[in-house]
Image 1 (cartoon, rainbow, N blue to C red):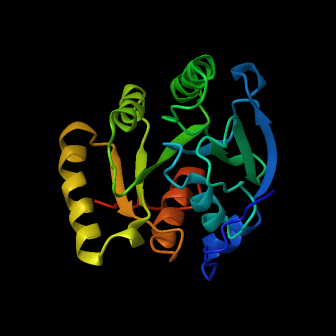
Image 2: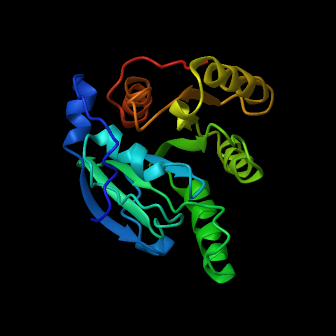
Image 3: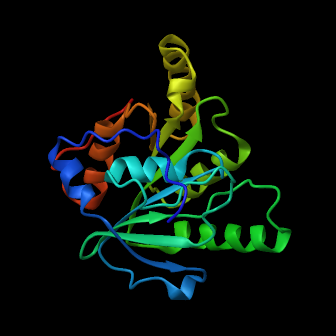
Length: 221
């Protein structure tokens, strides 16, 4: 894969970090019928096309080139499966909200995402990435609405937290938790930076919970 993000820092130290370092790319699909058998456990990554999803996936797996990083939004155009171990997967969903993608393709992605979130029984949770400078857009709220409809837990990564001061980033997080508590009680949130590594262990704990590696529920609120 091309254009790795050289700014990403990798300092794996925990058991979870070592586990996710072993993740490997499995396959890509463009139609719901092409999905793997609906068994096991999956944790999916979703977000706007410029939210830093690929950089986050690379950091969380300690692999610089697992997901292709590009300065051009909308590079993830299929559902990509990454195997942690048999019957445990990370799933990279197409980014949404990129206006320069043809309308027909955007409609196809939207329908595929909606059906995956609605029907996929192996899906145990959604990591929803939002640029901390532009959080909780209408499209993000639609994703959370899909989670509510099937009682699917969602964990928000407020990405690019290094772009703000520590105090400003913390303020955004606190301000976001108020509408989440009121309208999306199944959603939690945290700060995250692919550049500095902030929030990696917290995100690993959430993935571990969904993939069946953790014995206790992790609370980010």
